Image (cartoon, rainbow, N blue to C red; front, side, top):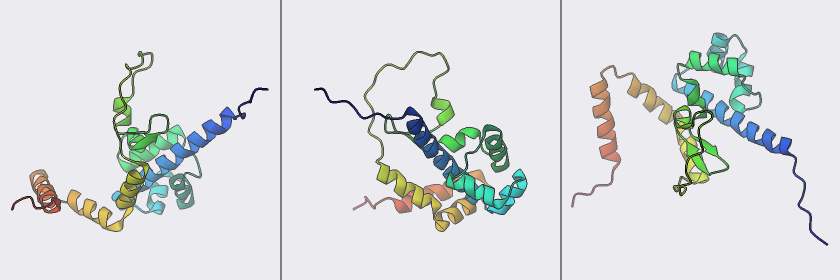
Length: 170
């Protein structure tokens, strides 16, 4: 007597994957909105929807359609690919950065097999997301981008990074 494998519904796998993507896109909408200092109400007004609808998008409860995603990207002044950056590919365990830039063109042959580079753990990525959601982080980023002189901004970044590094001088 042979064992049979449990039946899996391909539609439920697709649905779960889509829900994961919806939640990720929602988190990226919230991240960009808060970085810009926009309320859900203000973003909703810009899009012609209620703040409750924005809440649903940000939670991943409601799926964002293509035309709406275009409108959101325009309102938040980011490329559409921004919403897919830092997304974990469950098949490879690799986090996507620069989504649009790293996709192979349609009809292109698959890339040669290569060893999978070690990536950050799921916990490390969750910790990073929590860090990005902190008010202190958002305030720092807003203040940084309010510095009009690009060279001065770079010097500030260098200063902060030098203070964050462990003291290697004896």
